[in-house]
Length: 135
Image 1 (cartoon, rainbow, N blue to C red):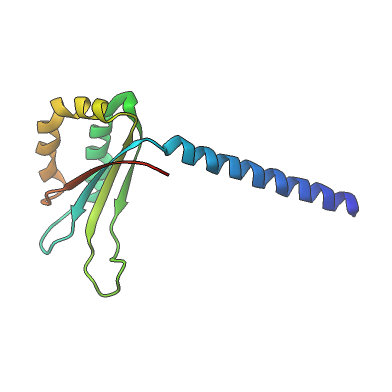
Image 2: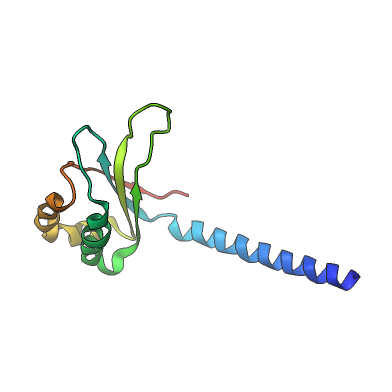
């Protein structure tokens, strides 16, 4: 019985340690990355085709970024943080890249193609925020 308790405690400690190290590594890996957020504000009469955005538009832009791209995420707006208030954003696309200069160099030549694809999934003019991940 005592041996089972010791083994269980060691397994629990090992799992906790592994999770803590993974979590710490994840934070360190993202610190210093450039985050490019493309926000699509909600407004009456505006539309957004999430399936197209997820399967066509974002992969196209990600391909332009090449090895500078660490990851990208897609978020679908559900509600405001304040009850009974309108949804602030219909969607948010985010690219995490290593270098802002490399991002701009990769996007520049494809800017017209990216913009020409907008009508395929939305009639919203996006707001773009470029920031640095600090933690």
